[in-house]
Each structure stands twice: as C-alpha cells, then as structure tokens.
Length: 137
Image 1: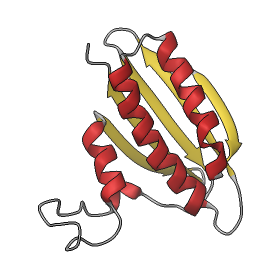
Image 2 (image 1 turned 120 degrees about the vertical axis):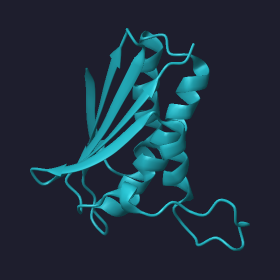
Image 3 (image 1 turned 180 degrees about the vertical axis):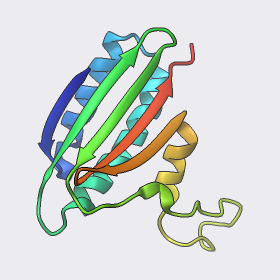
Image 4 (image 1 turned 60 degrees about the vertical axis):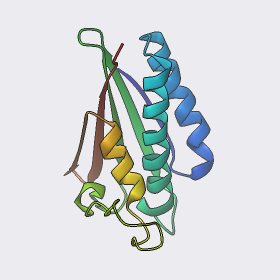
C-alpha cells in the first residue's frame, strides 16, 4: 500500500494524479484503465477540495493498493471534512437533454459507471470513499 497526505485544495490535483499513476504503472495497469481511474480521481478529489472543509482548508489522505491476481486497484480518499456521502445523490436522468436535467450529479454518476465498486463510510470522524477498478487486459 502507498499513501500520501496533502492539503485538500484543487491545486494539489496534479500531485494526486502523479502519485496514483506511478503506483498503477508499477503494477502495469493498462493505459485505458489508468485514464478511467484518473477521470474518477479528478472528480472526487476536486469535490473534496472544494466542499469538504469549506471555507477552511483541511487535509486528505489518498491510499493506493494494487493486487496482481486478479489485477485490481483500490483507492481510498480519507478526510475529516463534513460528513458527506456522494453516493446518496440520486443519479441524473441521462435520457433527458442537458437543458432539461438538473445541474449537478453527472460527475459522480460517471464515476459510478466507470468503477467496478465504489462505497462510502463515515468512521471515527472521517469520510472514507473507496474505489475499486479491475484491469481489463
């Protein structure tokens, strides 16, 4: 397992992506899967950075674990911001046009669609959001 803790600010996104990519590359994850994970990471990290501690700044810990058989990555975001489960938000009606849909919710919907598993828990004063993605070779 690899772990990093840094300020939960949008400007930290590049460092987060570099950290995750380095761990996925060491485990030889296909580029296509890395792109899917990066899109999910960007959505989730930026949401934490913008809303978890507002108007203050706090920290977020990111943990990356990779397994060889089956080839899978588990990524956890851990913060002490306001309790918030993004998975409780109702999925948008993607059959409606962009003009007809309510604003918001599309990003987390895309994360749910692209990851194999995603779950949230609030434990010991911490938000813990876990993503799992298998490497489809």
